[in-house]
Each structure stands twice: as C-alpha cells, then as structure tokens.
Image (cartoon, rainbow, N blue to C red; front, side, top):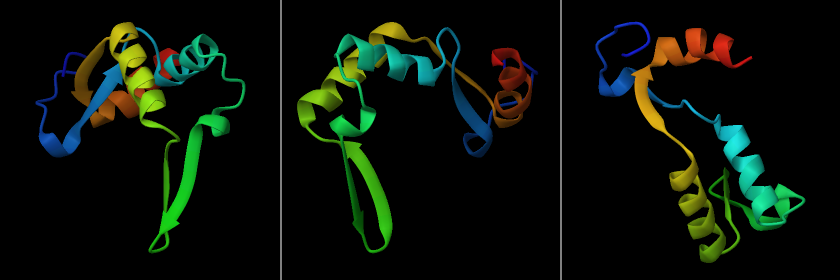
Length: 91
C-alpha cells in the first residue's frame, strides 16, 4: 500500500479515487448531464428481497463510465488506509 506500506491482498484491498472523491465525480457528472435529481436517472427494483439500483438506460450508464474514467485517477490501497488515514485526509 502506498499509504501505510501494507502488503495488498485481494480481500483487504480497496480502490481509492485519489484526485477526486467518488461523490464529487457523481456530482460533476450530474451537473454535466443537466440532471437535477439523481433518482431521475436510476431504476430501483427488487428481486428475491434484494434491492437493486441501476441506471435507467444503457446510454446513461455508458455516459457515467466514460465520465468517471476520464476524470479520475485510481490507486489500490489497503482497507485500513482507506477507512482511516485517507478518510481523515478527505474531511
């Protein structure tokens, strides 16, 4: 882990949006798409008592993925770094 030096294992690795937090990516995409309410572009369904929230259309999903991929930098970090050290830095 580049933050605390832990050896990364699949079960204890998180992905950090280090240049722009995920919630800010979402907010920027919504603004870019002129979407005022996030729920207007999502479908909320349930099957077998499991709630599933997904984009209302394939084009919205593809738009978000493209925006996300062009506007973020990601890095693998340890779970402990992501939930403690990095969280404190982002506040």
